[in-house]
Image (tube, rainbow, N blue to C red; front, side, top):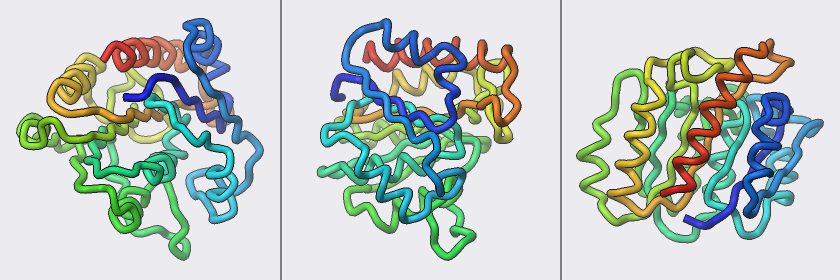
Length: 226
């Protein structure tokens, strides 16, 4: 996986919880892109917004990408369109995000997986690990050594471990860490993106920020070590 960290800032959540300065203090290559104020991005990404985001993304993308709230999970699709070799997608999420778009085919946080299947010629297949499980062990083993993109929405975890603005699952952080370690041992992880923040505008409390900060730092250290 390429070195470096990309932080996509839509809501200001990373700065408010202290995660942004924490990452910058770690050193290394950190790229922060501010999309605050960009219209047409909340839950739905209209064509003009998608074009603007694409122009702002760096030519060479870091391997670790933080994409803010689950409202912006469609960023996975936009980022993965940069892949030039075939890859598999492992999605850890309390929601499958493969719905039909509600408004005239506009990309959304709930339809991006469907869009990715239809529009990304490099995508081979998708495994969703969510409320009903997902037999990830055999799936990873069967694809040993192949290229893997991991997308984690922290709403797959219980509120003890993450605070989001969507309905949440029951996974613990140690369970998610176990999956990430296994994935890294079986496959060639080329990128990891993480969403599931909650902003002040969505009612985030200091406790929410503290819990998300602690989980984010642990995920950061884990991914950067693998």
